[in-house]
Amino acid sequence: MSIIIKTASEIEKMRIAGRLTADVLDMIAEHIVPGITTDELDQICHDYIVNVQQAIPAPLDYRGFPKSICTSVNQQVCHGIPSDKRLKKGDIVNIDITVIKDDYHGDSSKMFGIGVISQPAQRLINVTREALFLGIEQVKPGCTLGDIGHAIQTHAEANYYSVVEEYCGHGIGKSFHEDPQVLHYGKPNTGVVLEEGMILTIEPMLNIGKRHVKVLGDKWTVVTKDRSLSAQWEHTILVTPTSYEILTLRQEER
Ligand code: MF3
Ligand code: CO
Ligand code: CO
Image (tube, rainbow, N blue to C red; front, side, top):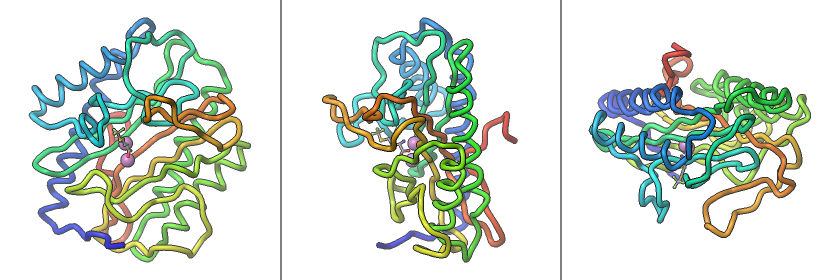
């Protein structure tokens, strides 16, 4: 395993890629309404990234992925493929955006509710976001990946949710997925020790039911085996000299 420590000029490019990624999530928010298809959301994001940002949507053709964004609805955990299916009131959807600008990647995802959503769905969304931030708040030089995973797992399980184990966060930079793998469960003081200049994503997936997942016949869409609702939030994080910087912070979070 070799973790790439980013130089100051690489960090500057990652800040730009991160900002563009956040901007896509800010831009798409008003379009996520009952009746829109996930294909339409994909098209709007694609055109914005390519024409306005003059950037590249990383998922398109990534290992054969057919679209520019991932849209994971309800029991879909991650890597959902946009389609002609319409979003309806009460659905929850994760929109996962990865933008390449000047060779560097930004990666972030957020949950949206369509119209009024159920209380259990809203609670899952809230707790998953809290788990992401509890993980992020661990980040500083000297902390371990186990510390991050433990913070996330503890919050999930205290709320009677399960943590998906098959998919994880990752280093990110010139490549979409770099070392290390960032597990969303673990034990304090174990695993890789973080150093200034590392950049990684944290992207916990929490299920209302059991943690087990399967991949659909399309080879991409990951769903919960028990069909329970799943939520995910993701940010790209820089390890700074004393703590962390969230490179994909959205307007509402700044
Ligand atoms: N954006 C996802 C992640 O957070 C990866 C999606 S891969 C794709 O790592 F091919 F489905 F786009
Ligand atoms: Co990611
Ligand atoms: Co992502």
